[in-house]
Image (cartoon, rainbow, N blue to C red; front, side):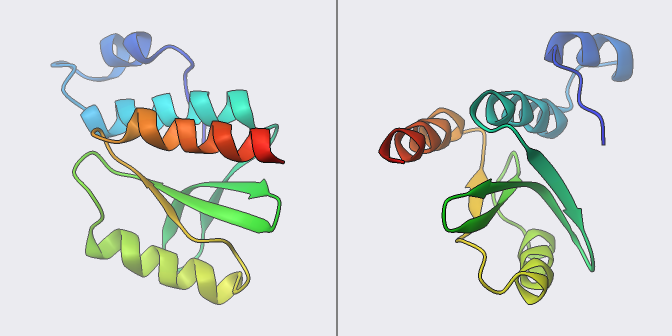
Length: 112
């Protein structure tokens, strides 16, 4: 999957109204994760996990959703944990907690 690094450019090029907040949040999350982690992956099995990062202690699945977790997100995570039973707890990124979640990753990186 490809993500443009400029969310405004995507908004102009892809959507007519610029109202695709979910995709904009996903792109912004990718850009910020990429600043913090060398490798940011996408996982697809019986469902999809937006991003997976390898942190100390194992892979961490990250789901991005503008409104909050849905049944689809949870089913995807269930499938992910079947494939990676020792993965760390999932992280959800929403419009409301975007900055807080990223700060949490900064603290984790600082702690080792």
